[in-house]
Amino acid sequence: MPLLVMKFGGTSVATLDRIRRAAKRVGVEVANGYDVIVIVSAMSGKTNELVGWVKETSPLFDAREYDAVVSSGEQVTAGLMALTLQEMDVPARSWQGWQVPVQTTSAHSSARIEDILTDNINGKFNEGMRVAVVAGFQGVSPEGRVTTLGRGGSDTTAVAFAAAFGAERCDIYTDVDGVYTTDPRISSKARKLDKIAFEEMLELASLGAKVLQTRSVELAMRYKVKLRVLSSFDEQTETSGTLVCDEEEIMESNVVSGVAYSRDEAKMTLISVADRPGIAAAIFGPLAEAGVNVDMIVQNISEEGRTDMTFSCPNDDVPRAQKAMAAAKEAGHINYHDLVADTDVAKVSVVGIGMRSHAGVAAKMFSALNSEGINIKVITTSEIKISVLIDRKYMELAVQALHDAFELEKAS
Image 1 (tube, rainbow, N blue to C red):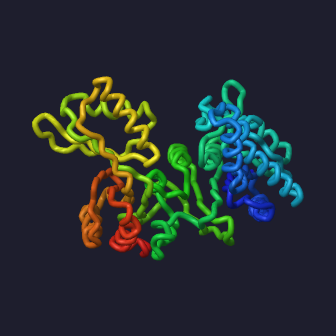
Image 2 (cartoon, rainbow, N blue to C red):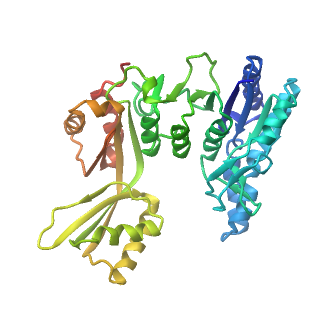
Image 3 (cartoon, one colour):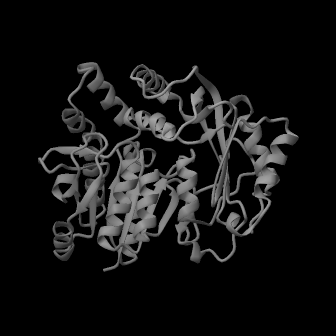
């Protein structure tokens, strides 16, 4: 039998009625001749509730027990989905991560998948099972303990299963009907994309688009897994949703495919740092060790042997960054006059594989922002993206202006 992987997020399985609706979609694919692996998330809100219970019970909790508790949300959904399919006379059973098994690292609450053994599930398919309902977001460590993969881990589980089992496609069902040129809540002109390249989706996901988890897109790109993003709440056709695929499968695309934003950014500047060989390593080494996720980096022109170094990071990382820099200064590894944190900024980015072969994208972007009186604080570029830091109060205006400037409401 050909194989499909279907993943249902928390909003898609939030109630028993929604689980029944999702099960009907699975039943349609079984009737079409597919064996199906269904990856399920916890019912909407359940993971937050379980995390809350853990923190209330033990503020300095054992991460192994945290995983034991938090992984139970997906196990409940898997059992309920299997029962629902059985009521529909579809041969199905539920699988927890350790039963597959999904082998992971020992990094509890942020484990990475190392291998998925296929013999157990394939054996049951050979015995007549048509649907394997797998609890997403979880696996088993080399020590035999339950692990979880971090937020959004069910997306990663789904793509990993599609790669391991050689699935024809991996369908991700969520509460949106595809990938849009930007957030429809900000721009009413946002348009759903029929197709988007892996690289573009990876950039959009890493830059703030919440449709797919970044690690899942990385996996899909590495193993050439076709991804389709669909709504759980709309009727489906063969052209529904957005297909995330190889660049070669997209005949013609706009120069810019989308505008992404991240609201919770901070700009940090080390003022008057000694400009000498190794200074960048002396700064960003301690930041990496402290777990600070540094993004944009700009070094100013040196004057009299001193320079300013600016970088961006998530707002939540600011206290860790300040502590790491203070410790590095106290230890004599770096010397700076002051560390200034601006926590009232946002990052706005344009993304598109068409940038590789078209000049003038940066000029058009900066002109559009200038026409709205928006000052740019930091700029970074790569082959298929340009990102800027701006004052947060102008974020929505910037997204709308860039969407209009690149005419993203029009199909290519």
